[in-house]
Image 1 (cartoon, rainbow, N blue to C red):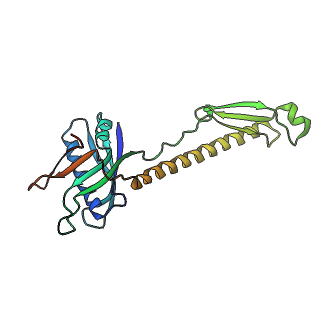
Image 2 (image 1 turned 90 degrees about the vertical axis):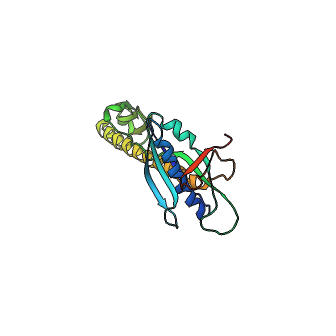
Image 3 (image 1 turned 180 degrees about the vertical axis):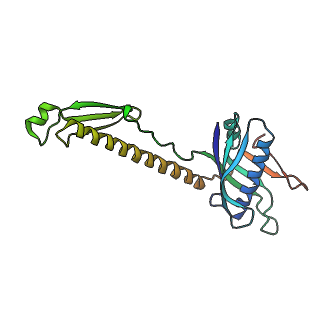
Length: 217
């Protein structure tokens, strides 16, 4: 079992990219202290400052992956003074963490999964076409995709065209689904809600580490 969790600074200031880096390390440390959970950085987008990230895509694996990812899903807050600004000021830096789909499994086409039914259709060809039932209705059972072909006067030719059309439609459907997955993933960057975090994390005094708790705990 694996889950992909995307942490993003959204359109926040550079401190949010700094917060992403701190929160990713905190999450990895949290996972390292648990059984049946492991993490891998599948993709990172560096921020302007060294050691910061605009976003990090984590692959979380193991029997407890879903439960662990759920505990880190939502608005996260890194609570610490800015390392880039002097004087008192804002200390809460918000990051969004959302579970996303990554990639699509292409539809595997087998001609054995297609039902071919001879049928009659109107149009050019006259009585011979109508009486001979040379048209074909082809149904791809796994997807429910249906095509009807009557362009040729021979059933075998129409059958071959139907197979090609089914392949093309399934490939087009896979491509559209893949684009939808990518679009949904990139929308995460614009969905950061500041306030009401599900977790608040902060540095441990003098240790360079971090400690935190779920909000409201």
